[in-house]
Length: 96
Image (tube, rainbow, N blue to C red; front, top):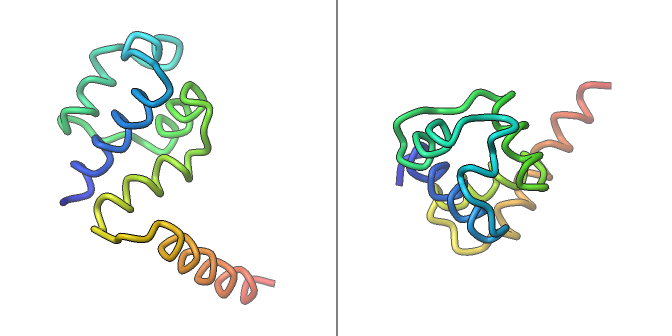
């Protein structure tokens, strides 16, 4: 699965799990824009991912993690997140 398809699936899954409609994103975006994202017609900016995540009441990292989980075909979300955490710790430890 490509990353655009995975993001569309993650957004739609999160939205439905939270019981939200596309119209519920009206404070940060139009229904048409959310629909375009879910149909892979557009790609969001980082700022838009932040805005969408606030409406979903989840971390942007959660939304992106779910998208990359779908994209990777990984079977264990915990293993994927642990790897990301370890990589980030190494990078950040070299940043001091």
